[in-house]
Image: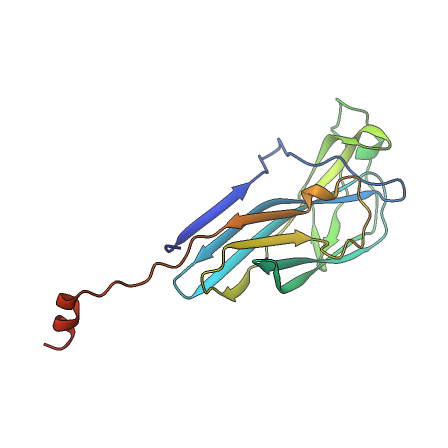
Amino acid sequence: MRKGKLTWAVLVVLGLVVAPAVASAQSVDLAMTEFTADWDGETLTLLAEVTVSSHGSFDPVATEVGFYLDQYYLGSYPLLLEQHIIGNCHEDMPPDCDGYCEPIYIDDQLTTAAACLAMNWSLQGNLCCCVYVVPMTPYLTPYHGEQTVTATADPQGIYAEGDETNNSMSIALGPIAAETRTWSHVKTLYR
């Protein structure tokens, strides 16, 4: 793989492609919206963006974003979400989703970056939901020519969601180009 940046983006600003949401007991849905892999010649830097959508109040969420190279687990970083107050976005009905989305804590940082959007929740129908973008945290790992890198939100499946298929993204990586040494190159090294 040459030095460079690969990106797979599903998020379009305020035109979010967010999955149908959660099972009956849940009011939170996680979705992987962007995943990048940047190799500087030595280290592979992985960035995974997750959105969290909610309809109404929700209990604290404690999960993680896991990273894999060729299906082998590399490690993860925690993803902690907590809501203290509730806005009025969930009181609206589509297409008039213009209510207030309450600030929430994401990894102990208060965020107000949310949009009130219409979403089709599998068991409850089309509802107005608050969608939050979780700030990306870099994950660094050595790269030795593996084929695929994957990021997965809630890899242990702790939280039941209406659509588990949007929790993961993969990027196909190319092999590291080997240096080719010609006889002329070797001779110049010793002159």
